[in-house]
Length: 331
Image (cartoon, rainbow, N blue to C red):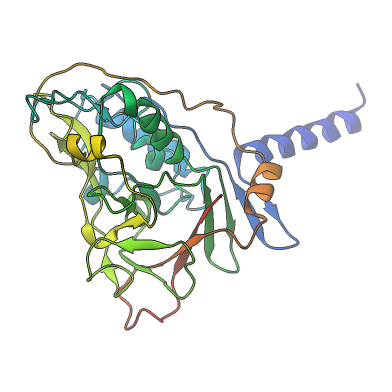
């Protein structure tokens, strides 16, 4: 074969390899499509295996750094060969024994969403279990699916990550709430967070008066061995529950049966039994294409929460952020 043809073929193949390995920019508007990686099972892996997985995804992220090592403050509490809390939030529940429940650990792990999506500085978390009763299995599946973003983009010039979600299931004013978690932000040195109400259009009720929309808050998220799954040996899971980062979607209330069952906090509870109640299917595991991302993000009138992040504590919430995160919710 002609040497010139061989050289041309090599250049084309190299370019293709780079394009598949790294997210691509749209030079016209400086917007980069971020691939959403679907949750994976982390059960019984060693801490080193988890770190290796993390580093492989960071290498292809917007935070790529050849010297990157996972933060010990964030990931140092992971223990070898332990189960992880599942994407399925259903727990076994006996009305005659309210404390006898266990949160599922089978299938894709909830906190792999952050671990293998390092380009997403913050995510929406549902830090409660759902009663494993027949009438709530569908609700449990919808919560699990809703916690996985549909698409995301990054604008270098705006210093903004835009993350599009399905419409969040409405929890009303019950004792269960959604929470913003910023594991990835903290891992990459962003230590402070603020919800900018002037740019947020999602109608929410914050859990407490002194919340992240009234002042800048320190990010304290980490993963450790906890007992919220109520297995005797514990599970690797996210912590900690922060009421100042929790919110409820305003609207209809949960049914009286669910209120009676009572949602359990899924982060730090007591140990117990082991029955698996329900496994959920997260559907298509194929990566989100740039055309899908574009379509998902095209409607500027969708409800949104706007988050500001800083590495060092700002003098005021109005100070320019080091990084912005815009959560967009499809209707």
